[in-house]
Image (tube, rainbow, N blue to C red; front, side):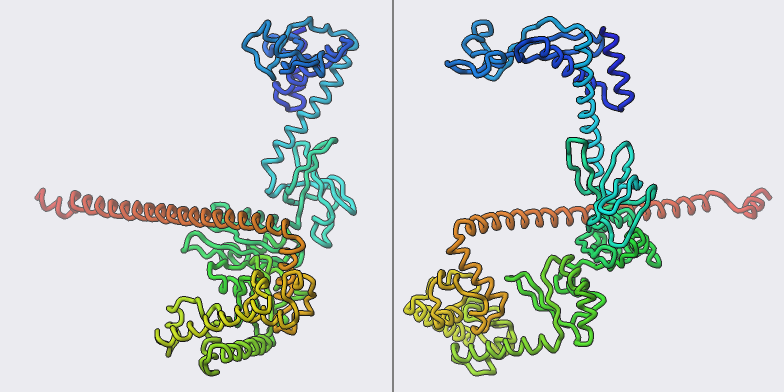
Length: 564
């Protein structure tokens, strides 16, 4: 019987392209199942096949359990005390095995083994398919349309693998017929009972990035790095790139000669228009590059709300926003910031109104004239806290200020803050200062409206706070934080802790990435310098050899004269 088992294993291995070890495992499971059916009780059985001879041995198994009471499953378990009578060094959880007679291959045994073997072979094929496709996960795959449909298409990915491309992962208005060859991105593998489901996409931003990796050798060689991708599938996309080699223009490399490279990617995406954005470590310049083709005139960055106000010329506003907000939306996605595009005139009016409020506030609280207050506002100071606690060196950079004047100004600011805090405390509103974004001036304004506690603030609506001179975004943030500190305190504290840990991890990852980038750039520059040195050395050796040969070989006229 041993030869027949080896023949079965070899035949199945060759037919199904499954390793022979997997076939033997399936056969052992099949024989163990057939053996268990021969017994009236549910025993635990293990079968071991000799892969060289094909002979097999059957063992009954017991699990050692450390218990003084009755066993839960005495057919498959043995107490630790009983096991140590025969095996003194055994421990709980170990397995005891006794050899039992192996089953003979009668009709029932063969039928049982065939069923189990068939199932195990299918499982092995599924595992092997998943292992093969997992290597292609996140990469572009060439596929053939096997069965088109309205809601999804079945694709032939090769080697017996089938992928699914759903309608929401297809580019709008594109259609394919049976037998059409297309390229897709393998985005997920979902193991299921009837076989793994290989999920593909043509709309994922990563698909665009991978297509550029194929078309642009410098990206594949890690000389150019993709920093961000945003897509409106089938219509428009933006991709941000940077170069690790200062001598290589990343934008030009991605566009290619006469636009050949970017055109090849665009054609694959049904004519999707692609903007190649030059990444810059200066955020303001990066925003300017991402907003192309619109020209940016002014940028105001708000770190607290993670937003950026962008001003463009009044007649350029429609171009900056784009059709249905497409340009600014894609720019926001590729930057990772919330962009607000405004006409220059509108922004000038807003800034002027804000500056007027700041000037008035400084005049009333710092005992200075409007001209001096305007200088502070123009320098970017907006609150008493900023004036009081910003290092004096920053003030000295302003023309006309000296140390004595700065010291007096900061003393006035600290006195005004102390006065406001005392007033706030006397009115019972000091609890409001726990909210980020609330300064003493705003806290006093809230108290004036009868809002003295976090609970009072949590019950307000955004419209209730707009008359205090703050925008809806800030009002909403303040109210939400008050609710988090009162109504959802435990969840909010856990969220803040998780956010702090995530930020620390992100910061560490960024620093590691920057260090790796610097190391790669240094290694690349050293490699280029070494190559240049080798070329210079080779040229010098060539010139030396040429001079030596010229001196060693006399001309024909010199040789004739010497003979004469």
